[in-house]
Image (cartoon, rainbow, N blue to C red; front, side, top):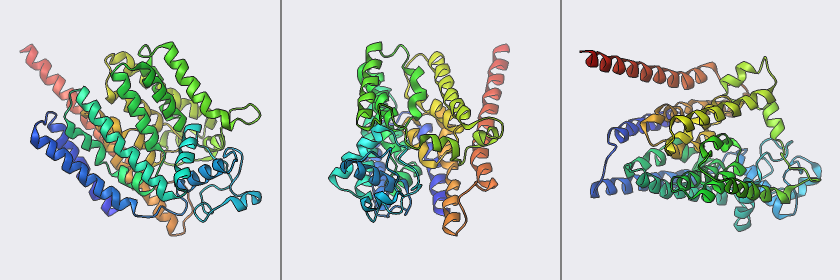
Length: 400
C-alpha cells in the first residue's frame, strides 16, 4: 500500500506538469515521450512476471475459453458442478464464484477463446492484455495528433498506476474494451462512421458499460451504421443461444447480490430494488452523455470519460479495474477529477489484504471510502471555488 501511495502521488505530480505544458514539441519532446514509454514498458514487464492471485478473474477467462474450445457453453456450465470436474485444469480449479456461470458478454468470450487457442494459460492472457494496452498507446498518439494536443499527454495514460496493476499484474478484460472504444472514438473524429459504430458495438460486447455513450453518437453515425453494429453484436451471440434466448449468464446475480465500493447504490439499496437502481446507474450515464452532446457539439475524446464515470459512481460494484475504461480519455484538465479518482481508489486494495488475513469479504472500512471519494469531492469543491473566484475577478475588472 505504501508503494502504491508513492506511485499515485508521483503520477499526480507528473499530471500537473503535463497539463501545465499543453504544447511540447520538437526533438526533445519526442525523446521525452520515447523514454517515458520505455519506462512504462519496464515496470509493466515486472508486473507481468508476477503470478495472478489464486482467485483473480483471469482464471475465469481461461475457464471460459477452455469450455468453448471443448464445445460447451460458458453461460450454462457451472464450474463447481461435479459433472464438470474433469474439465478443469490446475489454473481453473480455484476460480472465483465457482457456483455461477460466466457473466461476460459474447465479445469477451470470443477473445478468451482466441487467446486460449494459442496457449491456454493465465500468462498468455496477460500478454494479450498488455499487447492491447500498448496498442492503445499508438491509437492515442494518433488521436492527440488529430486534436493538436502534445504527444507527451500519452504518458497521462501510460503512467497511470492502475495499468500496471490491473493489466500486467492481475489481467482484466476491460483493457480490450477500452481499446475498442478508443478506436471507435478515433474513427468518429475522422468521420469513419461505420467503423465508429462497429467499434462501439464491439466494446459493448466486451462489457456493457460503454452503452451509456450512445447519445454521443447521435447524428454522428447513420442509421445503417447503427444497424451494421447491431448485426455484428447479434452475430457474436449466435453460438451461445440457448433455446433461442440471448444468454446473460450470471449477470442477474451480479446485480442482485454483488456489492463493493458503490456509495450511491449502497445508500439507495435500502429503499429500492437492485434492478431499478442498476437501471438508474445506466440512466445517469445516458443523461450525462446527452448533456455533453448538446453542450459540446464538436467532437472531443474528453467527453467519453464523464458518462462512464457517472454511471460507475452509481453502480453496485466499483472495482479499481473498472476505471481502465476511462484512462485513454483522460488527456486534458477537464478530466482532472476522474484522474484523481483513478488514484484515490487505490486504498480499496486493502480489502484484498484483509482477506489474506482471514477476514471475510465484505463492506470496505469506512475510512477507505471516505478517503477515496472525499479526495475527489474536496478537489471538486476547490476547483469550483477557484472558478467562482476567477469569474468574480473578471466581472470586477469588466465593471471597472
